[in-house]
Length: 72
Image (cartoon, rainbow, N blue to C red):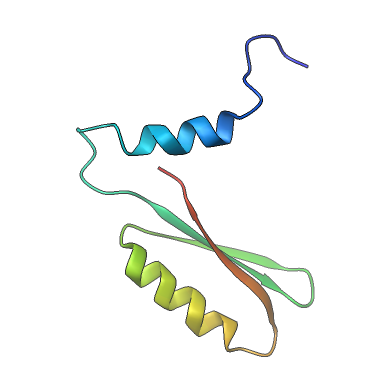
């Protein structure tokens, strides 16, 4: 284990996204997992567009899951 790395670093990073006043927009990563094991990712700056893309992908029979995560 490396010294100085907090255990909840992902949680701390997510809280920091809302505090930076210089940031004009956030980035949302849509990760699509297919039934054959392939993965695909696309980044959006609009959360609504990311959600619509994920919902559209979930309707496909070959998609196992589609997740949205905030990147920055």
